[in-house]
Length: 200
Image: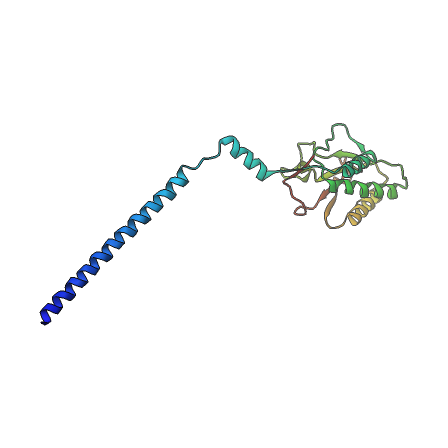
């Protein structure tokens, strides 16, 4: 009797193993099929052409911005309040630099005691001799001639006045003091603007 029961139990267990083995085989087949479909979908999806890749990279690298009509009028007004050395290019000049021009012109007027004086801009985005990552190349810096203004004390006062009036967002450097290229360098402080924005 007990042998009959043991034989029956053995048959049941053997049957269960067969069923489980069959289920495992089915599940493995389903998973293999699913992975095959996913792999085909990935490998056969359309890839962008080289031209499309280039366009994508350009979009990620640069964003083109345009002044509003009012901002363009202000830009032209600020330039009219200065003189420009021949060859100076204002291509891509950022709107923040128009505001800087206004402050610089006002400081010149105060130091020179002449409300009609027009400072000379000697460099914007036009000179290849600047440092490789210079703010000049992204329209975020201007140089103003200062060598022919009054005496050294007045020039230092001018630089300090511009520095104070522009505040922390700008860097103001009185460069090449006493030399033929003495000038006032005014730029947006690094990290306060997006170098990937190109203003037109």
